[in-house]
Image (cartoon, rainbow, N blue to C red; front, side):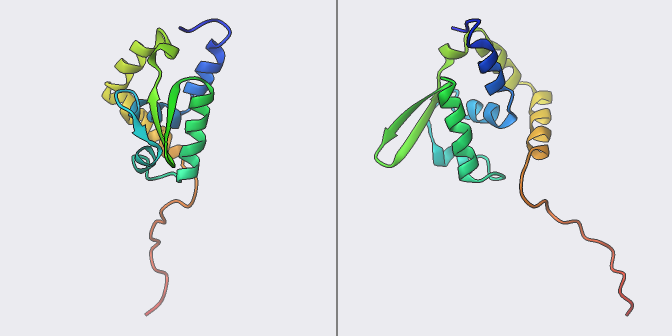
Length: 122
C-alpha cells in the first residue's frame, strides 16, 4: 500500500518513461531480463538492467534468480491505488503515442542520419 513516506520515491521512480514501459511489460506476467531488453531494442541491455535495478530497489518488482537468469514480475500491491490508474493509462492510445515520443526523445546514442542533398558537381 502507498504510504506518505514512500509516495514521493515511488512517484519519482515511475516518472521515467522507460521504467513505466518495463513495468507494463512485467505487469501481467513474469519476464526475464533478456526478454525485457529485446522488447526495448533502442537501448542497451545494461541500460535496461539499471532501470530494472531501480524498480527493484523501489519495491515495484519482485526478482527471482534461476541459474544465471533473473526474472521480474510487478508487485501490484506495492503500487497501491496507482495500479488501477496505470492499467487505464496503458490501455489508452494517446498515452502510448506520448510514451513513444518520450522514449525517442530520451534515447541515447547516435541518431539515424538524414541524407543531405548532394552538392558535388558531376
